[in-house]
Image (cartoon, rainbow, N blue to C red; front, side):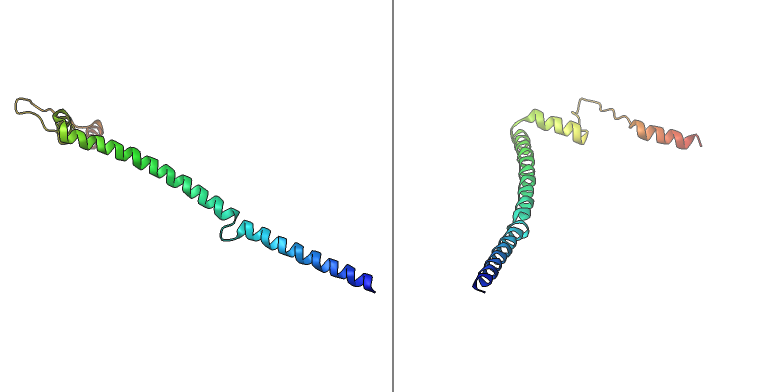
Length: 111
């Protein structure tokens, strides 16, 4: 009889230990700071690092442009010519319509 109680006690202890280990395992995988959560956080961190590098590159480009706008008259003139279609008083500016606009007007006229 004592042997049976010992065997039953060992089975119970093994069952409790295995249950505890299973709970720890699932908690380690699916818990608040488990493996799946850490993988998700790692991916978010990598995405944020990518965004930061893109913003830093754009920021560097904008700083260079701002410095040029403050100190480089040729750069200012280039911007005025390209974006605002400005010219000097002794120049004549010719603006040609886009091909897309031209073909659309031709197609409408042929109907």
